[in-house]
Image (cartoon, rainbow, N blue to C red; front, side):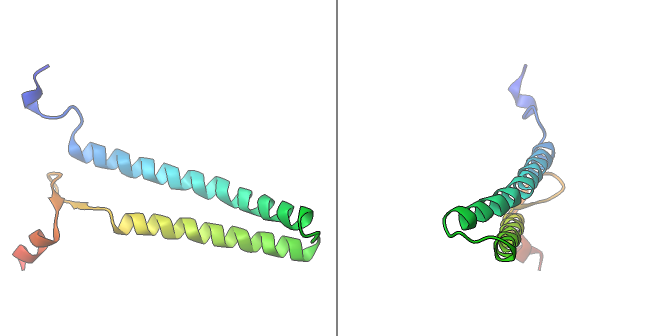
Length: 101
């Protein structure tokens, strides 16, 4: 095949697939890490500190809330710092925005 025709996968398709892959990754984290945080903190409090009952459940739930918020912040940070592209797939730089003004 002649390589002068361009890449095998168009740039906008590659960008869409990377976005979907990132969403799949963060969805996987959102599903697994809260369970690990809840049961991990619950076991540590029960086995190492001999804490049971409501206090154990409360700290475990707090660990889940912190974990979920950390995942959301990581996703938002990644999305905010992702480069922007125009309709042709070219990256838009801050200098390009200043030229339009």
